[in-house]
Structure formats: C-alpha cells, structure tokens
Length: 359
Image 1 (cartoon, rainbow, N blue to C red):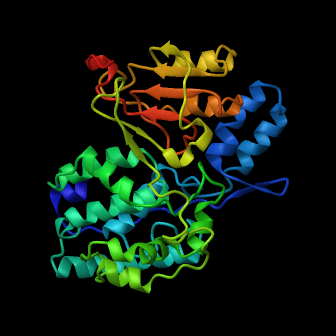
Image 2 (image 1 turned 90 degrees about the horizontal axis):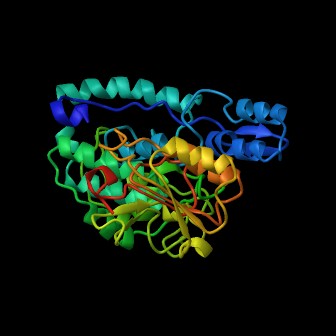
C-alpha cells in the first residue's frame, strides 16, 4: 500500500512459508493442528501433553503458516502483480532459494531506481485483474479481497466487489492447499510454484511489466508444472468456479464473502436455527460450553470495521467449531472477517455491518 501511495521504486521481499511439522508420521500445519485441536482437547479427545506437543511440532521453524492462508496468499499475489521476483511467493523461508531471491532483489532494486521504474507502472489494472484470477485459482484467503481493494485504492486503480464475482465465476479452482485441501505450501513450491500456475493460466493473463524486467507472460511461458495433482490443468479443475465466492441476499444486501473451496459440497446448502452473539468472545464461550448444536447457525454481529471496531478476525470461533466436531453441521455468519485458515460454511464481511444498521 505504501509503495502504491508514494510511488517510489520498490521491490517486495517476503519471508516465505514455514516447512510442515511432523507428528506420528503425519504432516502438520499451524492453524489446523494447533488452533483447531484446542476443541479436541476441550472434548477430552487428546491429553494436555499431546496438545503441547502438537503446538510445538506444528510450528517447526521460521516462516508464515504452511497453507494457503492470508500471508502466503498475499505473497503469491504480490508475485503475480509483478512486485516481487518470480518464485518469491512459494520459496520456503529456510531454503537456499529464498536467500537467492533476497540477494537478487537487492541487485534488482538498483536497476529499478536507475530505470525509474515505479510501482504504478507495475500495479496497473491488468495486474489487479490477474491477481484476482490467481487468487480464485489458488482458493486464497478471503482477506485478499480487503487487501487488494485497499492496495488498488492507493494505486488509484478502480476495483469493485462485482469484478471479484465476475472473475471468480470465470476462473477455475486449480490448487487446493490447506485449509480446504491437504496439500501444503511446500507442495506448491515443488510442483512449480506461481510460475507453474501462471503457465497454466497464460492464455487468460494480461501481459504487462514486472519488477524482474520480464513481462508476466514471459514468466508464465518459462514456468513449468511438475505435479499435476497439486496444480490441476484447466481440463481437470477442483471446481469450475474460483475458490472465493461473493454472496448477496437478505442478510447481506451489499455483499458478503465465503471461501467456497473450503466448504464441503454437502453443506453448501444449509438451513438451521440462528444463535446470535454480539461479540466474538461470547460466541467462543458458547461453542466450548457445548451450547451450539447440530444445525445451528452462529451469527456474530458488531464485529465489522465500525462495530468491532476494527473488523477482527474470527479465527477463534471458526477453529472452535472445527475442533468441537461441528464443521459439517454448523454454519457461521459474521460482519467480521476471517483467518485465511477458516474452513467450513462460514460467511463473512456481511455488508452493511450491524453497527451501520445492517440486517
């Protein structure tokens, strides 16, 4: 956002994702295997000692969380927009490749300054459209909608929620990492990373410059898919629509968001009795107290930008629902936002928010 606002030569260097953890022969990710297991502990399914081990093993070193959560999604989209070097989105934090990207970025920023290449030369309308396309193909975090709109505002590029909806309906879901799937960021890296995914999407990309000195279509042409189970082809997607859906209706006349790639097919149509809470904390207490039953719809209101204030992240209640074994039988609706690790029938960003008289 700052780069778009002040428009001085900039290159983004992200930290990179963490390696997966290991416990009893299974790979672990931080959100699913640390946050969500708290519910299993509350139910008595695991001991406190096991909980402590999982918390430690799920976070084995440096880097962002291991799935397609918010930090990793934004790192990938930064690469797609052309503001970081090719490979930057997925290279592991502790890898030699990450160190090379850092070194190369230091060299490249000098060239950008000498050539007077500015962020707004890179972050044009086409860059944002491609970022949305890749976001949909990745099944990225719902937070990306907030972030892309905010960055576009600073870059003086007009984006709308309707554009996300339009591109989402046209772009297939090709990569299914955690939280919705079982693959990790390391799997995407080994399968070809963002250049591999761009190669798959190259015919629908908008050609434009990047900080690397190559155009986005040049990068896409050089990309290679090494594992078609991780990066699906256009002929064999996980879903014909993108991973994020824009919803409207009587509860959200101005729009709401759901990560549909993390919602099982059997609960995409859901009917239940509403349980209404006026803040996150009360909802979490009720979930852990066993007051939420099958076929309930948890409504958490007054958590929007004004009502919160600050539009807090509803990771605690969504993780509690999963941990308590309710993810296939309970839905959640909020005017707050979600963690990139949220999964299940969870609808957020309800607009207008409750504090502004929303339904």
